[in-house]
Image (tube, rainbow, N blue to C red; front, top):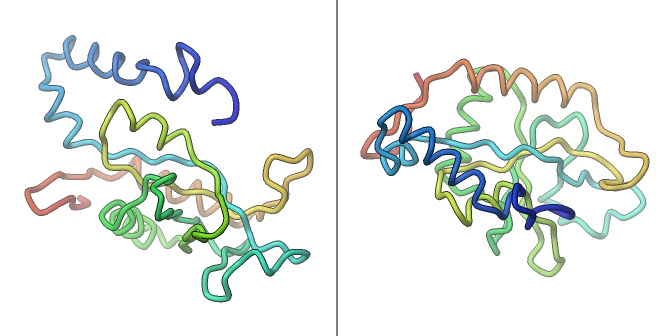
Length: 174
């Protein structure tokens, strides 16, 4: 999101919308129905509690390395996660035996955004923002837990191996 998002092929461009439209046209699919039956995982990273700056985190709202995949929320909607997408991805992780933790951005501190949020300005698809807890995001040395990376790989294998069915009352995992 820092560089290139507003380029002709970036997350803020019409590339995703145009590509999905061409796929639907080529396969003779209804674009609106296809989008309504879709689900997107926006995978990035998440800030772990930094031992040098614990005051930046709420006591009950902390993500830690070795804590599992992080599902990210933001009241200003700079992350895409909502209750439905969180429940769905949590169920995928539970079925895969993967630990999950949630992060809610503090309202009094500005936070980042994700490419998922930028892309969804053009294509409305239910989406969950996830990441791995790490220290020193965007620095030359980033530190994360190997166990979290393994959890993410396991969760994504389960996600791509699942069939998500859109129903009138929401989504179900088959």
